[in-house]
Length: 423
Image (cartoon, rainbow, N blue to C red):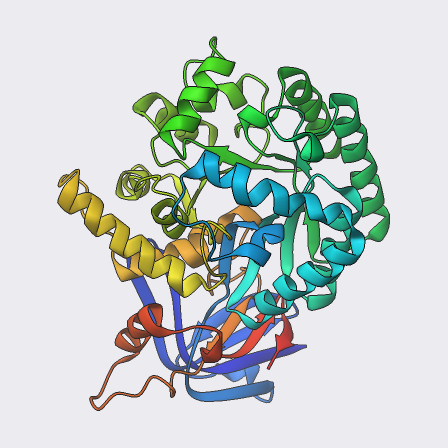
């Protein structure tokens, strides 16, 4: 059945310019966009139109990097750097997800709030625990969101209470994937998730590549987030040319394995070149990089070189699932980098961070994140009447203002893969 949404429609075709259709019609059939029109074409006369009036309709936001089990301690430990923060906050919390009762309680909070947000797609880290990872996937499927979820792999350099034996990690990952296949989820997919090079032995990484090839699933991990982490990888992998090369030697760095690498704050020219050649997606997590004193990624360079760049909330190093926050942090962090470190890389603009939150990150899922014809129908209707102002504003100004002021209260309705999931 062909349907349409009517309102102030905003989306991206390219990274530096918004496409705006005022009082326009977003026409879709099942889960595919037919097009955006200023007036309803004659061929679509009589179709069901949901009129949202002056509200703004945008593609659903894509969170390319978020840790579901860390939602419980967001806002804590923000005075530490990455490695200390992991030992003090993250690992003790993630160990609790061995208890399925605790996992049920904590993951329900995460899923409920993610559903209320403007996020329609997400790539999510769970923990090493198979049962609670499947529980999380069940919850996300029921919520109607479109996500990729990973059972984490860790067989070294982590506490005894959160470390797998190599064969155990391999066998549990295979068992998890087999059970997920039987579930036949519609919108929830698995993603291979070695936590990062320091937590995975060479033997495990080799076997994870075998799993990736057998099950043909994508990969997510972390890259060049923190100076201490990078030095540690050099010690652990002395034969690697750079951090990313440690993944690439196992075939888990793009090319034939679609890959997201979170952060890429301190990637050197060799690493950037390899990411570009291999088609690696970068999940830029600006609030997290600020909170853990990691630095500011050279996102302007990544965009200018035509690399795949999206945004991540990176809970709980990031404090919120609200992708408006990720957008505004991306702008603010880029300004500080430009002013204090490198004036050759100009600050990011509002249209650019909107693109990263929609089409840029959405490309990891396929034709997602835009209202161009043949894209999947993910949409969020935003109502900004709470954000009062005395002056007249155009649609672009209203959207920019929401990037700095909005949260889940501005989400009026939400559609994922053509289905309304909240109203």
